[in-house]
Image 1 (cartoon, rainbow, N blue to C red):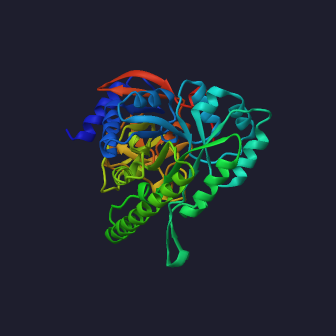
Image 2 (cartoon, rainbow, N blue to C red):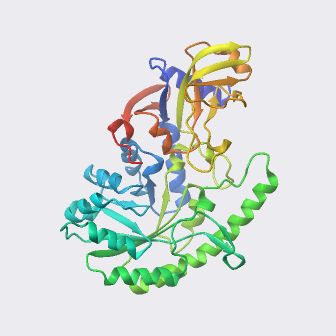
Length: 400
């Protein structure tokens, strides 16, 4: 029996008493992936990205492990909810315009001590001050560095359009603005190199494209390492007691950890290992988060239809944003239909061995977005479900 076939047999046995659709997390794979992230971080703490997990029980599980420290959150409302739940080191990775949330933050010493908010513009400070509603707590802030690689005098840009702060001088200027502003404390710098950490460099069947990606990423890492070190020096000249410099992402952990200027690594998707992380030369992980859809029809030879399954991931639309049928191996979408909201036909010889009611296991394209489709995760150890825990959605929390 192949390893995938053995996994399928385990998952089917573990969930035999449960009706699909359902979602699982294989804890053996989850823990192995966590250990690999810590290994690649080489002694620097890993801040877990909650966007990629979206389950409090699993955030607690990973933060109980040596090598992990703190959460990187994705909305202010989520950050405050996690702080009220007992998490005490939360870095909001994106600027917010949530005035109600800022009023709550500025009025509560526990929340203000636990949550650090992201800024990249003096306008963010103005918005927070206008939202305080009498709250006098010191607001912890972090500056975001634009990591994009700019070529040909800036005419060519490689990387996400995030922060406008690209040069050491720009970050130092904003650091001085924070230092002069009562009610704020600058504590960190964040830089997410998505064009390195979030882009696979071994695209199946595309050797020339893969080589071009590797060359781009090598150049981007060199340029960013030099610029990030200069940024940290410039900001520390303004704020000597800076607490942290955060960088990385699942696909670039070991490269970012090697930079002296970086004090902690951000990662989250590497815990679940969704399909977008199959095409990397820098690491390999074990798929840990899966969902199952039930077979509801057998339209003909070599075809089955499962209920639902049309769960596209965010980003530019394309086939790489779709979930993939994973187990049994050998199934594929009908190119005329693809995955549907209500039903999904699947083609391939394994279809002839599937009966109505059997489960087909899928992998989502991106990590935490799977949890927006399911209210609970069944945690599998060996061939048994040992716990069932709510996702954010299962706790009534849909932050975006």
